[in-house]
Length: 302
Image (cartoon, rainbow, N blue to C red; front, side, top):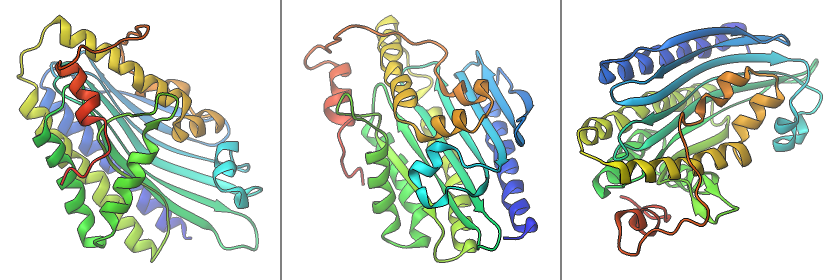
């Protein structure tokens, strides 16, 4: 794979980070993103941008990274053992948004590109990514909009794409230790390298840009909703599930740590405030109970 092709992907990721940060900052209207450029000692680096204490967003982090090295991280070879002994490059954009208002969902998205190489062999490359939504107080119309946007962006790439990647998302963002979905899902894909580089790159671009069309209308609709201490405390409690998933199950977090990435950037996905409560039980018939009964169940939102 040519250096020019790799640079083309990198420039899209940098542009995507710029676009997402600008749109989020414009919508917030109060806070702006602070930027940290960092260098990885073993090779590569990144550009971390974080917005804090905004009018709408308590914290929003949008990371770009491009790291490389001679030895594949253990989490990567566990996923693809045939790649042991190859050098690698990994690049992408990853973001997590934690809103102030409990009626606005938390959201995560990422798009990434990976290349593994060794002398006298064809490079192995693939794209991955997706986006998912984690509401605290859900609305059917928001879930339908989220999944319709996902389905619409997938349709030009084949009718089977949305159902496949929606199912993969439901399976991936699952807290096995609690037998519970993290949210209402969305799209998740990995190891995408067929039928062609152009096809895979175009789909990855559609997912990256489609995130804004899926998420921002929900933020605009829900952020004026009044809320009180009860909703805030439930939001902080449910954020604990986000922490549990990222630390116990998320492959991206593990890869970042094992590859010697910047810890502050990797863990910017964590919510700024969170609380844990022993054996919490939502009151029957309450809006809090409806979250798990109605929204945190795998279903066809279309």
